[in-house]
Image 1 (tube, rainbow, N blue to C red):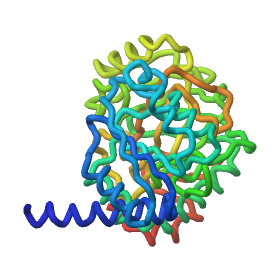
Image 2: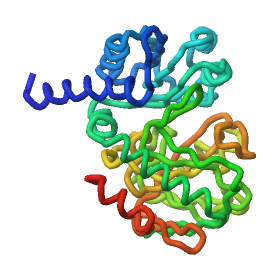
Image 3: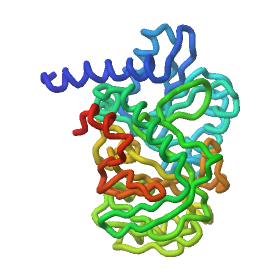
Length: 350
């Protein structure tokens, strides 16, 4: 083993321990289900199971064949009944599989039991785990996320642009939550830290959203070679413009035969200083200063009006400029709001 690989292995062990102890807060005796598929990084899976055991928890690793779809669309490829049975009452479920079961019947079972702390870490690999968990200051990221949530919660109107032609406006509902991802407090759905997300008023979204970083799914996309432009009226995608990748995306959305796949379910800011553009959507949507848009199925945690869909897709917009009411929050991918400067200066962004 080279020195570099040895160092990475040690850092993965540390990162996994940090995940289960400081983020998921696993206690002695708790049952922790770790799901993976045939495209998962088993080093991450095994190190996480070891960390659970070190905390006197009870890990259970479940591996299944990777489905070509996600969410409800993945159900015809996986053992739904068996996986759902496992979700009767685990204390923690960590999802490392590449194709997520988020929004599937398996997920719905876990969330409805009222006991499980579920965290979506789909496609997490060793390098990403070290950069986005092991080497970051969790407390500082949570501090930034909470301040961003506070600012966003107070805004009624927002406008977002970027250099590739994004020009979109929407309104926020003050009664809806602005979610600070990664802060685990009791049972429910959680995501990797480094993301602040919410659901705008769906029918208020007007203009053009541009994906110019990555999109996933479908599997045929990922890192984008040219921008995909989504033209929206009242929150519904009326036209998709761009090159061959835009055509692939449009065909895939249409193939699902679900009108809600052409609706925006949520938006988020990326705030993880260890994240970089890799084509793995879990990481890409946490790129510092980027904006992410989710289409299709809308989690109940957003308390929106869109509801369920057969699948879900996420797209990344790079170097955005974001206005909250009349105040500039982000400029070309840099957080510039006065209330954020002290926190931003304390974070090392690479």
